[in-house]
Image 1: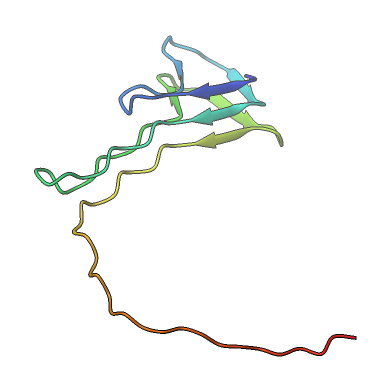
Image 2: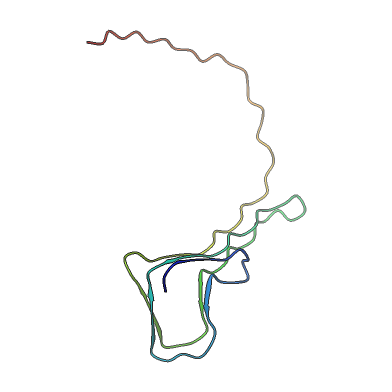
Length: 101
C-alpha cells in the first residue's frame, strides 16, 4: 500500500481490509493517519479517543511495514481546562557587553 491515507472521523480507520483474507501480506510503503480525538468542552470535560489508522477484519494477515512506511493512530483529545492565571507584572532586563575579535 502506497501513498497517504488519512481519516477525519475517529470511527473510520484510514485504511480497512473488510473481507475475509487468508495468507495475505500487506506491504506498507505509505503513510497512514488515524483521526485525532476531539478535545473536552465545558459540558463534557474529557477528550475523546483518537481513531485507528489501519483496521483488519480477518486473521492470517501479515503487515510488513517497509522503511518508508508509517502508521500513526490518532491521538486522544485533551481534557477541558480553565484559563491560567494572569501572572504578575515584572521587569526582565539584562545587559551584556561583548568585545568580539
